[in-house]
Image (cartoon, rainbow, N blue to C red; front, side):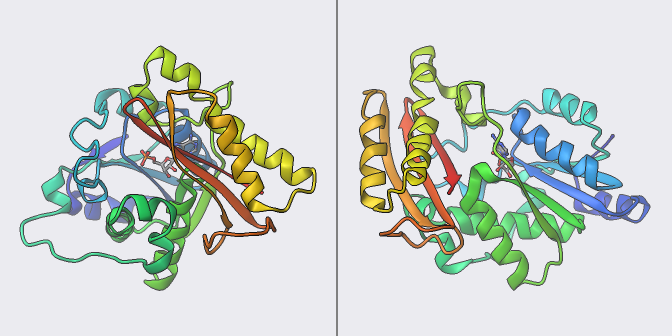
Length: 276
Ligand code: AMP
């Protein structure tokens, strides 16, 4: 496995890499969710590249950029064990040198849900992923369904800017009790960790109601909130029942719908979703 820190070095390694080339972009502190992306890329591609970059431009003021967990050595071990060929782990000034001025704005899809609560977040995501796709020039890039809106934003950007990568979405990996794996789960105290599965359980409530034929999205959201209120440790930011492609909020549950939520538990802000 080759670890590369500069764009110039990546450009040098690129011609020798057997194609198809798959890219797994990450912010590090890797867990089994990230490794599911690596596994899928390994199964699909002749060369697997992963990136580790905690992207400052996707964090808002007061968010956890400076405290975001980092563990580069352990990450490199995991990537090597997962069969990754190339790791691109640039320092911040390699990605954003002095004078950097361009931003990718993906429009409405980046302004709803997470975008509404984290203004500018998806412009930061779209900009850094556009840069990674331009540097690595992968045939396929792998993203997790856990960040469903991010997947939509990246598909939009990839299509609009003719970046030419196939965007592959990999299902969410969960703990045995349903909690979606996330680097931010590391922030949870034992009590908070015990409360956290309520997030997934609330999504299962939505799934059950949908299967029972309930179509009133307000009712679905009401019952999800009721469950989440069972723990005083869970501070709900939003629940949404939206069209799975446009993310427009739905009155009537109709397929394809994306049920999603964000909640704060202690210092962690956690998101999860289910497609119905
Ligand atoms: P991050 O390091 O949090 O930016 O995540 C890097 C990639 O891993 C993103 O495409 C995420 O959607 C994906 N990912 C994170 N957690 C999970 C999970 N639990 N299951 C599947 N993919 C995930």
